[in-house]
Amino acid sequence: MRKGAALVAVVVLSGATLTACAGGANYCSELQNYGEAVKNFKDLSDPETVDKLSTEAKKLSKSSPAELKDSWKVMSQYLADVKDAGGDKARLDQLAKDSGPELVTAGEAIAKQGKDTCNVTISS
Image (cartoon, rainbow, N blue to C red; front, top):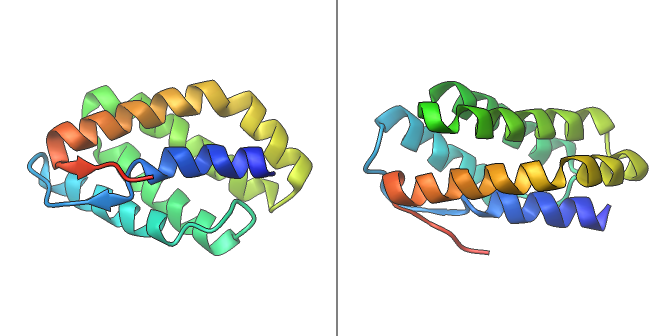
């Protein structure tokens, strides 16, 4: 589970420290909410945090710019799968293994666009 928690931490922490957004108001505002949820991130077995991140990712998948739709769908699906795993270590490990590369790519795209458009400062 540590590998899975580390993976999601790297990806979700990419939105951790947010400043005022200069891009689309709805998207940047929702990205700030996601960043707040990330600040409270503990681990993949914490259902409250996973639920909050999942909810915010779903919103972002709808309001994101066209070039990020697929990235947010990847993130949203991953968090939904984590939620469905219910803290089961074996399932979380397998999910991290199966989703890892695609999730990292999505997280990098989200972080870059967030920094460029919404003035996101990445802090890990």
